[in-house]
Image (cartoon, rainbow, N blue to C red; front, side, top):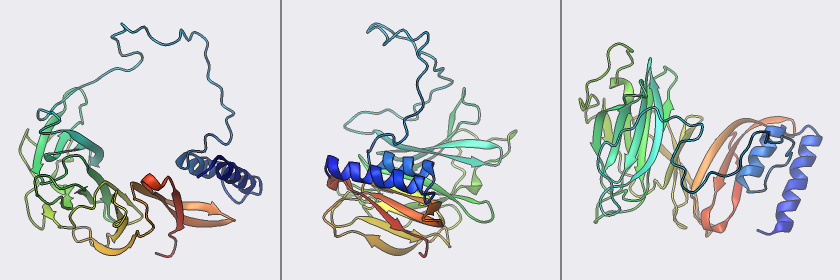
Length: 280
């Protein structure tokens, strides 16, 4: 990757927008992912009243207001660190899905000033890398997928699926603190094996993407037609580069046609690959 190749991609993206083959937002998204900088930096910051950086001694929160705080368990670099977070809406209630070296904790954040833990699931491995994402099926049912990459003390870092329908969606009737409403088993949460593939996790278009920061393993794609039993379809690897992350983008205008694009960030290779995922 050179500055010349970056400039060439900038020229191409601007030309596609000018020819109405691509939306400006799409071009900006690709430029951002490929670290090209803004293609159309037209917005200017309003600096009226801006007083510069804060003093070293400043201890406030600026214009941010912290509404609440929770630390479900102690953290330290030798025992437990928090490594990922996602959100889920169940009915009228909101939940934070918090991953750590320990596993997964589900926090009710419906009242952000008073968050509380409702579920704690221990999962092996995943000391440094564990991630979570959610999928909503055609009926509106929500599932969560938790995966990890590394092996901790010889324990496998497996993929888990959770049916989140046991979480309360009633604004007036929350689950009790530490009630663990989601049971282990076919109608609750399951250990699916598939060890060591979850550096990062994404869901989109009815597919699960397990991204592995390993040159030989790459990105793995699963079909979610049966959400509790994802079906492995294929993997993208063998190019000598890692797969740190990937994302699916639907209805992208490419040369006048709406396409589904899969964008893969190939880690230490410093490459962003874009695939036509429309016919998968």
